[in-house]
Length: 90
Ligand SMILES: [Zn+2]
Image (cartoon, rainbow, N blue to C red):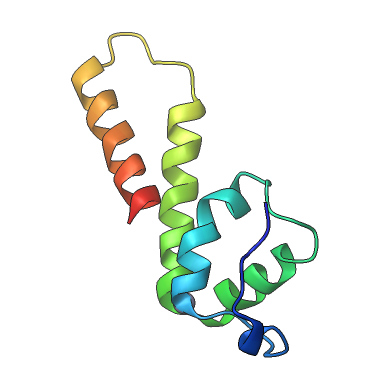
C-alpha cells in the first residue's frame, strides 16, 4: 500500500502524526511502499509520540507472535489482542 497524500502536500518533505498513524501498522508489518517507508521512519525518529506508539505496537505484535505459554490465561491474551487492535484502529 502507499500513503495517499493530498496534492498540495506531495512536495512537502516529511509526514505529520495523522498520516503516520494511518500507516503505522502497515509500516511495522513491512507492507508499506519502499518510497513511503523511509518517510515514516524519519518521522518516528524525530517524533516521540509516534515513536512510542510504534514501540508499543511492535511489542504487542511480538507478544502475540509468541507461541502461547503453558498455562497462559486465554482471557489475558484476548485482552492484549483487543488492545493491539484498538491501537491499530485509532
Ligand atoms: Zn508524530
